Length: 223
Image (cartoon, rainbow, N blue to C red; front, side, top):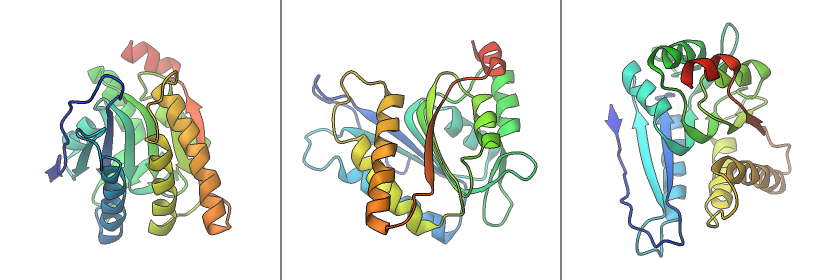
């Protein structure tokens, strides 16, 4: 396990709001590692030129279920999960060797039992076909509050991920976000990233964005 590979300190002026991004790599192979390192570097570059950083980055790569649960439920602005996505039986994130499998149904149950759900402004589910209705329903059972959910409509690889993510974080962190919630900022950034992706690649963007509210089950368990 490698946790908090980069944690940048607070200490900003009153006119700039610090952002926290949690990067969670469950894929655990070389391709996922390369893509996540690229994403980390892209986000970190936003801090260039500031006396104090405007983005804190928590980077977690682990097989330990408790560590992964902690990462899922930690308070942050963007929870970025990179893994294989599957919904054949129930929506799950998994590693390339199938030794690490995170079921959102199980996550929702554990969240309800422990009173700890997903506390992010946005979730970027960076895996294959994570934008289906089944995924959205499963995520809603884990939520504390309304979020922006970014999933995919097809198979993706490292190239699709890096093109979209560089545009998304560039748009998300470009301003102070006055008058907008984190979820609203993320939604706007994701739509801008979709447009940029299609302009760059001349292909339809596989990433889709929606707003999700907690389900009745989540509201009852996590109130």
